[in-house]
Length: 292
Ligand SMILES: [Zn+2]
Image (cartoon, rainbow, N blue to C red; front, side, top):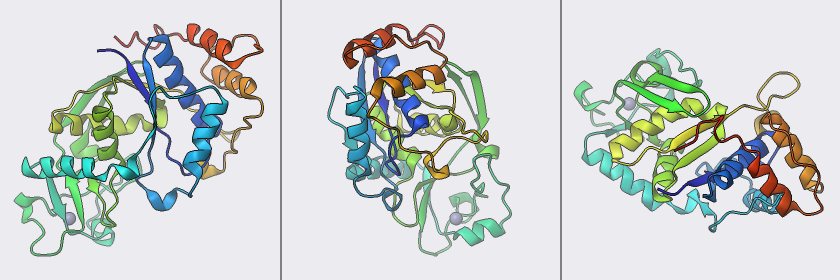
């Protein structure tokens, strides 16, 4: 299978130093493998995405010479695909309706998962009596057991979904699609072979692999890149006010991103294209696992 990678930003804010590292790493890995590189706008959480931010990000990528090989797709326009996947999971008994409010789940005193969400105690599982006539608010995935997986940089990984995550939401009470389902459906529909993204998303991977298996979809290879930390040691993110990158000097920004990946950047070039080609030649695909 020929390599297909993607960069999948959430348009909650413009590209910053941290998201540029993820964009560049996914682009370099695709180019170093002679593969294709796609861009997907992950705007399922519409209320958190200011209008126009998607175009801002696409403009930043273009200015940096990171141009996708196919037109970008928007998750907000792909609800039919996600509904079809949810319907299949429901029909297979792998998803069920949940009538619980957030307060009820909190009152059930489930422990908090590592990623900060409450671990749902399974109240509305059919074998526990279902919703008992109350209206369905959200749809949840029925997790079972442990997922073992291999990351090209982090090595062998393992997570017990039942005890560490719980039955997670696929479609939220407000009608919005959950990130996990949308990503899994899109990666398969776009025939993505390699996911290269920031290490903060590694914790999502077991949930996504479980959904892939439940839907009979292939599991891509995964490479989680080092996080860019702010001066105070916290993860650099839009949420803690990371500044939008200055695209007036694209090679400087790209050189900084390469340094954050532990790579020496090519010397400054009069043109961005040749510079990026040289950067791709320096990508240590072998160091991160050959990906094949
Ligand atoms: Zn429930």
